[in-house]
Length: 262
Image 1: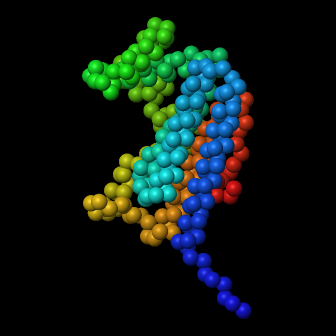
Image 2: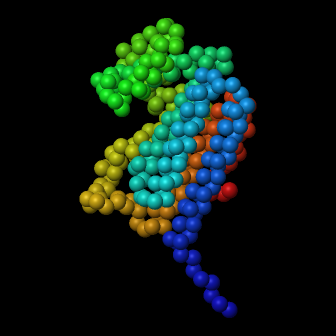
Image 3: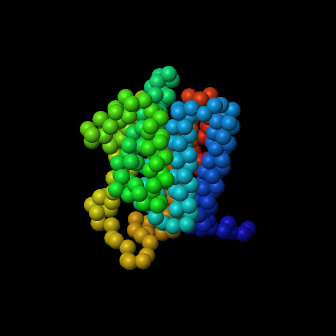
């Protein structure tokens, strides 16, 4: 009787990573299909513009994560994209916590706040040939809002509010957590990994100039499993963001517990 060929852990982990990335991209396509059909069948509003902006940005960040995990071991960069998806999900939850009749006004406030942020930061370059067109469009967009909306946004910015929702992301995560969720803890853990303070604490060696940092991964099998886990987490967060949105606009949701098990 022939002995079974032992499974190579590296090959097995690589198959897992590639399978998770493939299924993640399938889920991206499913959500985008539902998004496009729903938005095509309904008139555009400020609310849909805000929600559409968030879900499309989530797609970009998730796609970036899968590419990074597929091509490189740039785990810190990938974690930055993961935190961006998390920050989008927190904003979506907060936005949808307003009564439906208030959301269009909130969407206008968000847009006005964003216009002011853009204009303030680029004022010194407003006449540059690469900036002028965008600067003029932001001014034009801002002029379409009621004066009290614009002035309220100006007041918030003068009071050193960094975001349209008037609090830090940690506090926002705490506010929108439900039941036994601890989104503030999740956010702080994610931020800790990104800032590199833990690597300093645990004495992780810096890579040599011109080389990728494989520190923390004793072998490629571990690296591939780590990539699969990150893509899995990011995809589930993206799906959760869509499901939050879909419930508010009567669009089909997506049911998935783990990208690995699909």
